Image (cartoon, rainbow, N blue to C red; front, side, top):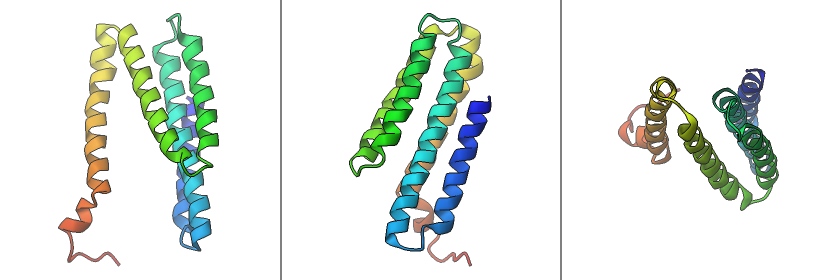
Amino acid sequence: MFIGTFGIAVSLTATAFYLTFYSISDSYQKKFESINYCGLLILAYSLTFCFVASELCLTPIYFYVMLTTVIMLGVNLVLVQYSIGRTIAFWSTLVFLSLVTIIALAFCNKHQFWVFFLPMFFEGVALFIAVVLVLYRVPEKWCVESRFI
């Protein structure tokens, strides 16, 4: 759990730095945006590492999935430094997390499915809806007259 907690701490720290200092200039915004994106990647892969360690520990592919998780994190952290790399890192992370979830579903029993995977599915649907609402700026469109000072 230390790895998951460390990933959360790194992500929140990177986001705090980004939100504090992005408005200095355009060059600082790009640098801090890259650092924030790296923090989000560390969060995603550290939680995936914890998930793999807890759910796949008795399977024959345990070591290989753990090793692939660390390698994918390293590759994506390098890719984020380039302009096209963010898109590649995003899609490769999405595919990898989906693949790990499908592999874990293949090795889970009925109790694990009802206790972990079903709630995770509903949380994922809620997160997807929230991301779509934020990307299409629905709160700003619905609350035009509201001003937050």
